[in-house]
Picture 1: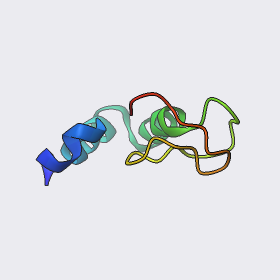
Picture 2: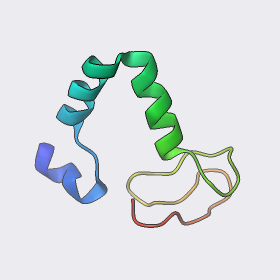
Picture 3: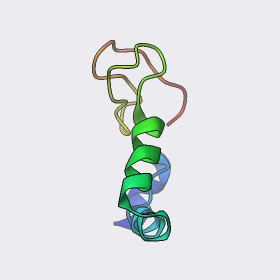
Picture 4: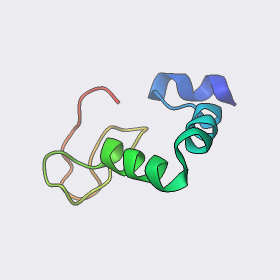
Length: 62
């Protein structure tokens, strides 16, 4: 499973390691910032498509 997510820049195991290192609250804040749309500030950016769920803005290479 780990290999399938490399092209999306996501590591499920890495996420677990990071969450344990910084605590769940801090990890969730980091992830919220990482995946929030920088264009509208309301939507979440799909890790698979790189598009905001609210405004449809295409966000770089996620």
